[in-house]
Image (cartoon, rainbow, N blue to C red):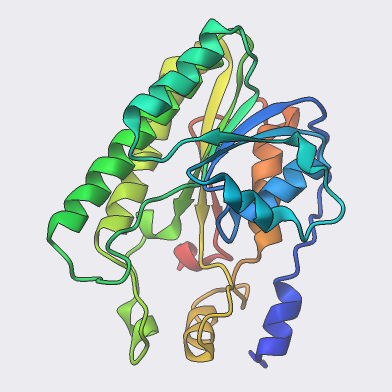
Length: 271
């Protein structure tokens, strides 16, 4: 099997296999300007959704200008960052007080101050645990409450490292790795999803986690070759794999799925 960059680039092309109609649906999202958030937002717009992009800097809207087949007028920037807990509360309070209908919320944002220092145990790890853990609970609780009247779907973007430990042999000789707080916060968020799925299920509010395996992002070829040798399907995830799962959970086709984890990892965690 050839694991060259040409084949991997072909695999990673974003081609959504399942078209979902979300016309007129109001979807809020954190992390919508990340490597996976950008193509996800683009697909939400193609589906007819109104996307409320929770971002710190509106200049990041320029990241979507390369997409010629979407209507940028349906992106509504909402100034917010994960560490601003009062702002998170005010956003959802205004939704409820204004009688605004929210159909979906996707939590794809994560704060990773330890990403460049994988052995850190200083103030950065305290910041990471505080910001990520508390903001996740606030977002799940407040958006669930905002959806009580009409129901809705909440999606948490998780990680395979909430289920299995990183294989540090993957990173041998490379300037990359996984920081110790990352699996901790991802596992905690998945547990919180189950908690709120139980609490708000009576209101037809559904909460689920997508457990995502490694996504190809032009990593060093040594890493890619090592990683895909561990994956039964023989490749890394693509943006389309992730987006298709999100679109399904937002749709009425998933109306009886809540408190679940949908694992999108090519079978890695099955080994």
